[in-house]
Length: 103
Image: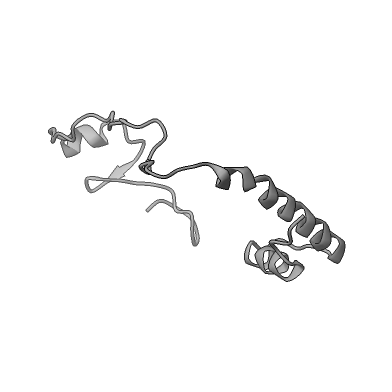
């Protein structure tokens, strides 16, 4: 098996990903990652001359969202109709900071 990654590489990757690994885990992860890289070797053997790169394997996808059309909104009165509490034309909500009470 080819040594693509060293234990130092694995330690650097683990540090970057904020994963704590013991010395035994670093050694095992080095073996595992090198095996994974080796398993990808057959991909490099395909003759891809003249093959255009694709940006999406399914291709031809289009946006399925509706058009962004402006519509009239609610009046202030309608918006506050079902508010449990209101004050001066605004929603009155419980405070989550400080001494409590409504704000």
